[in-house]
Amino acid sequence: MSFYDPLETRDPEEREEDLMDKLARQVAHAKETTSYYFQTLAGINPFECVTREALAKLPLTRKRDLIELQKKTPPFGGLNSLSRHKAKRVFASPGPIYELQGMEMDHWRMARVLYAAGIRHGDLIHNCYSYHFTPGAFLMEGGARKLGCAVFPGGTGQTEQQVQAMVDLRPDAYVGTPSFLRIIVEKAEELGADIGSLKKACVSGEALPGVTRAWLNERGIAVRQCYATADIGAIAYETEAEAGLVVEEGVLVEIVRPGTGDPVAPGEVGEVVVTTFNPDYPLIRFATGDLSAVLPGRSPCGRSNIRLKGWMGRADQTTKIKGMFVHPEQVADIARRHPEIHRLRLVVDNPGGQDRMILHCEIEAGGEALDQAVVASLREVTKLRGEVAFAAPGALPNDGKVIEDSRVY
Image 1: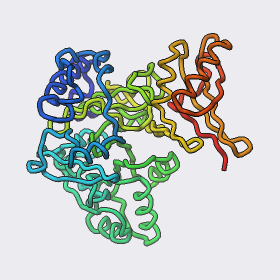
Image 2: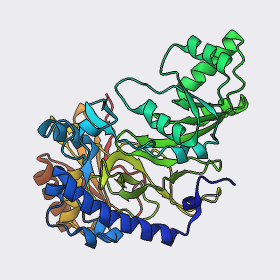
Image 3: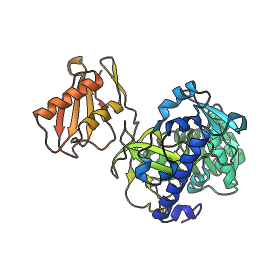
């Protein structure tokens, strides 16, 4: 086995101590240097934030809220400690959401990810992420530079030109979406072009279907996945074991119940929440909106950090019912009103063409009084009428859904 550095195989207790030490200092830094966290974390003593329990009491910052925050406090919502005048680059992701790049070579911590994909010093990387507006291409550029790799800026589209460049330059690795890699390889086969130098790929931005991985493997290309966002950078990455995504050493990851900031039980599906230690963009408890779960045990590759199961859907399950929006936070509010309920799942269907809500509740034992109380809470919180159905603990699917839209149109 080959590792990027000793951090990947350190004792989990040592890692946890290091993360908690960094957490306290990052909370202090965020409060001191950003207007957003100065207000959001008012009353919080940073140096009491040295446990997971203390972390779980801090407020979430949701990705979906960045657009409004940036409108109120342009251009970055008051979350950056680095001004745009000192930034290396400024980007716009769909929304728009604006991000800046600090002066560090590997601002998004991608070198470790590329190394795990088999990419090494001296390799030539064919980069097929967009170089326009969004930071996707530059995420990979930073990691490549730190590893000592050259990069061909292929960008998106122009499939035949991509193939010709691969024929002429003989790249060792590809970075981009898996679907575009398959399109390039198919075009090369159609043209009878030799791009056999391409043996490694690090893909992100969309799901990697098993059939696509197998198809590329048959053509001699080993594909590894990366989970990253423009705001955070690398969150987790796949290794040669292909057994989940190992969490990157530079972030602190929690899995929480959608609509809340409450950590779920080990193995339960929930929303991925990330705290970064980036001094320029100190995101604390950043709710990504993605669903995943922590896998048990250590990765067969030998890395000792926790592993994520992969992307399992969206946590923001806001649904419009009878003209009213119902949010996961409202389901969480009902749960807080009735602590005897273990888990809730609001199922929406439309028998006869009429919207219907049924709140499924896991509980040890129900009764008419509780039924009526929960029905009343449902109506009070959502302003809509609904039904309640009780189920035994563990009966509801472990898929992270708190609102399930089963309507048929």
